[in-house]
Image (tube, rainbow, N blue to C red):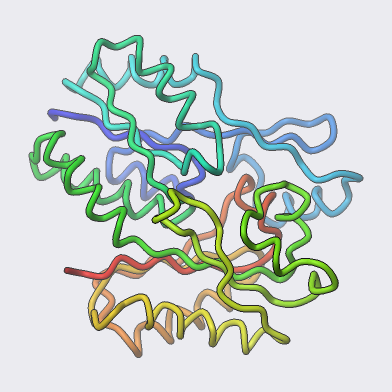
Length: 281
């Protein structure tokens, strides 16, 4: 192996998927009241129950620099270099912590800002791992990832804007607030703005919001009929399965992942869904 691939838990990669692709996942941390958990330690249903019972929104934090240093040391014991791919710097301090840790390794660790999160990050990480497995050089992989990052699309549907508003990461979506917190809202991660949220639509009713989700993906495809998809859910897997079926009807899905969003992502989004799409060139 010429380089190892490391990411963080906001990529929402299932442990078996990460292991199958030799990806090391560094967990972020969630604190609910006086209890602190690593991201992924709580089943989703238990996390939502604890969050609902807590008087305040859970707190999330990036991994300490020392955790990154330990992970890089492990990786460099078997690889020449490390490619560390993470959640957008505009959404978390994780990238900055990774960069500070990377300074300890004399240029052997390369940190890449995905400008994304959840499966929008996860697909990029899987592409990086595929490049490593195929023997592509690290410099060529980074160049390839830059192109993938620009094509990557992620839309998120929320049952409520309450959590995102409380967490302070709402960005341009603030225009949708006020008396509209009860609406279903769709928003996307704007990679042109390096990971800021931007609104798509607000809908009265789940069906309308889900239709907006599919229509937005079709618009963003700009004529592409083939691509890789990941559909995420927070509490309602059936919605993700419905979305996946709809996407298969419209596109040739080279890959289709259905995944459960982790505790860190769910802290800020509450219940909802997401679709990540990488069109083939």
